[in-house]
Amino acid sequence: MVASFTAPLTPLPDLLPRMATRGYAVLSRNDVASLVGCDTAALDALATSGDDLVEDHYLRDGGRYRKRRHSCFKQVDDAIEQVPHRAHWQSQEYNALHGGMRRWFEPITAAVIEQPVWQHLLVALGRLFRELKPTDAWFVEAHQFRIDTTDGIGRPTPEGAHRDGVDFVAVFLVDRAGISGGETRVFEATGPDGQRFTLSEPWSLLLLDDTRVIHESTPIQPLQDGAHRDTLVLTYRSGGFQGD
Image (tube, rainbow, N blue to C red; front, side):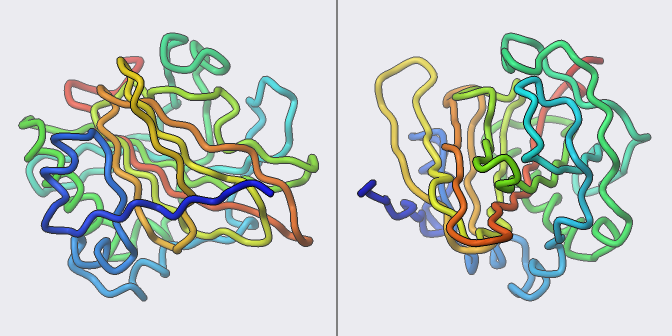
């Protein structure tokens, strides 16, 4: 039997010190709502079903287990502007499997982006990250993912342990249904320290200083029909989008 480790939750008042000292932190659903300034029901309004997402045709391992959408935003102070739809690009330094490709994914739907909580969420994270790294503007990429078990196994991070090539990453667990696996692992980028745990509470949040840590999620296997793991990933980068 494989051991399962509970996520190491950080109380909201300790969030900035934890990020400054360790480079990552996990917030509970209730503390996420407090950070954003909303109730938890508002977060649930951002959830999508598998029917809302589109199959990822760029998987170089030949898999059919990932669906996603992607949109980009620019944040100056507390003002959020959606930019014209653009490709997602990473260098091979950060993504050995899919780096170097301009991957054009379908945009996130207006039904999600027009939810009032969407802008509040992006603004709250931008404010938090400015406390850690002052900047005039954030260039934000938003990714909705569903990893399922169409192939018998689903890989949340087929590229393995990695950095994303940005300043900060926010990984929200949106849903986890009928699966085993999907363990989160965070390691120092330049040292031996690491921690493993499982995000299980909907809208719990993993925050990462991408300059200091690498991360991955282990494959998932089905315990029942319709097994899946849904996440919303937001990346924040100063100076422009990757690939510009």
